[in-house]
Length: 245
Ligand code: FES
Picture 1 (cartoon, rainbow, N blue to C red):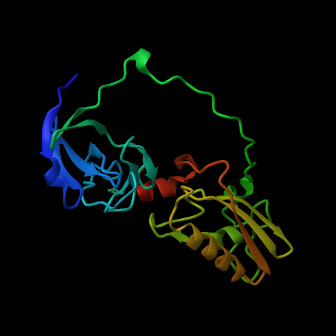
Picture 2 (cartoon, rainbow, N blue to C red; picture 1 turned 90 degrees about the vertical axis):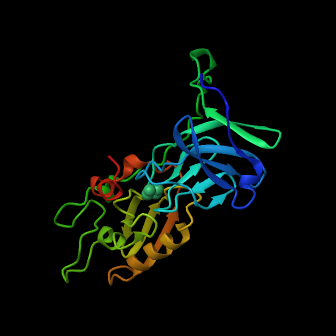
């Protein structure tokens, strides 16, 4: 197990609350959060290996200044695309006026957290219709383009682009179900995270895109969070665009 080494003084984080450092030879970022606690994370966004230094910090989250991925400063967990892998974190101690840190030791088998059973929740069934539209533009939900060449419902939804990821909401896997009852369209969609800041904008744009179609009288967008979105729902095209393999 590596030793704690002095990395910085508290004074060095007095201004921005951040300081780049090397911990055991690894580029790291020291952070003072709003609650005046100190943390150290690997200064390397797992999306495209860019530094996180200078990223906006809200509570215990840091946002990558390049493409907006968010990470939990305490656990390293990736909270928001385009990053899906966690960042490394370090153990930190404050001694007098100085900050010491070291690599976080790997838990021994008997130190591992017990596996707790997750509550079984009834999963919302996901219509495959939204994902099986044929190349000719027809799917089981009756989402075919009309004879005037008007886009299908899914094609209309593909016009809605997540501004943070620059990928359309269909390829991101946010559309769970689409139904069309004689022009009254209902869509169940989700967000990449319940705290996604662009959620209301995406919902509004989805509604507007659908209601632009002459065959649609009105569109109702229901935001659902169960089952939660996961990167596996993305199409290969979306993965390619985001550099996720
Ligand atoms: S490099 Fe961090 S989100 Fe792309």
